[in-house]
Length: 269
Image (cartoon, rainbow, N blue to C red):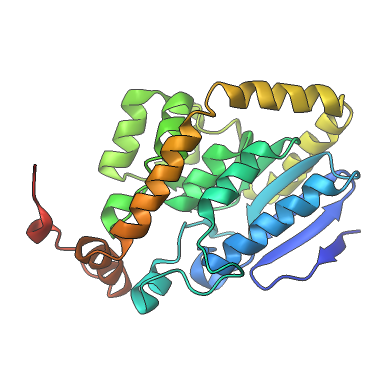
């Protein structure tokens, strides 16, 4: 039986056997995250970190349509930001950090569309299992946003420089089969088998030495931890850019379901 650990508005957190299952629960917004969602995800990961029963974390989305579609662009179009938060900050950089730092494997169970900031989240997870109908891609340049930190630099480590640039510069959408071919995900399964498969991966890793896994995760992270500095700088830049006329044109065009007109903002120095 699932044991509810804490009640949230935007997230469902439960422990099943050795797995902490963290579900982004905003299906009406395709599991896009607002600032409150990010706060709750950070809290959920901290709960999983501290719980001795938990040997691995499964991150997924509610429903079958979307894993996560990144920041809630409609919210940004309405208010100019991602809404109120516990500490009056949009803590997406801290969420990225805790996904990497938690000393337990994090498995992305990609149950649908993973685009934009949602795609970055699955990239940062230690491994990814995708439903056959899942779709992947970046959308930032379409909507006046970007991730010039882990979302780009670490992605290049995963799929290679050429493919990472294609993904970001052209904002194409890729099938689960294509994601597997480019080693963006570890396995693809039918949608109705996704969570069972994720739990199987948890049960396998739960039989292994948790201290060895902790050292191994930290060793893998050490190779790319320098990217955290770029990530911090990118988040500062994004704070400024997202409220600029160019950034807001992307958000407003998305909310109004029209093509963005970025031509007035072309300037080279």
